[in-house]
Length: 315
Image 1 (tube, rainbow, N blue to C red):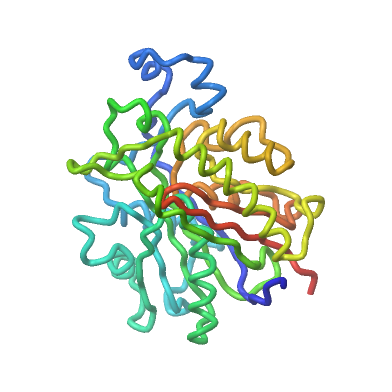
Image 2 (cartoon, rainbow, N blue to C red; image 1 turned 180 degrees about the vertical axis):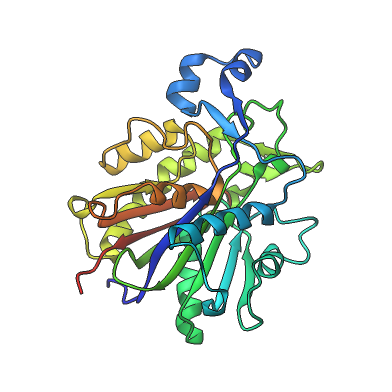
């Protein structure tokens, strides 16, 4: 049955650090095939936050961009909730990054704040969590912020991760509306394969790329199909896709198995896989007048997935 969720995505603010690391010299240093870099990874450069920056600083920058897109301001007194999706919180993770952001934005005491420790599936899953919280508490407006600077965990000498992940942040205003209303969800976790993406004893990110690929190729096409059915739409009704860009090979394979059109290249080719920020970055670049129905799916760390349909309703 289709969702009766009254909440929608009003606007999305973004922040991508200016610093880039070119994957060309990296591939040469790693003796990595340039054709594979282009056709399988699909990422030419990765973004990196500045030395001294914290996760909450990226959040603040994304919120500033959101305010500008809304006409120059975002009244903090109107916000009932702020949620930060991150696996790389400020400092040692206590207090939670959303509380730090709450203070930096000057939000009222009545605005509740919490973090969600999810990666690639985090944004879509958080759409369900945030809208559900608002419905349960009678709230009207929420900030959903993503910022997961994986550079905190990366080894720049690891060819399996260094050429893929980039730093970024986004801020989404969620409120009742008809444009890109949040639909029904399909979510799941294969915890038995969680070690495919994990930090080691030294805090360094390690990835089993084959295991991640196999999971995505097997589970995501099925999730896309279930989400379409749950939202009572068909593939022909979809105007645009926002699929997590784990790599070009993963996206191409998912699209082929789901029998949907694959993009010519990754939208994140010049800044990398930004984990929970990847899908809102894609959404922020879409024209809502033509992309009225969007299928969004995040998949990766966990290993987990979350899929939904964002649909413009005619009042």
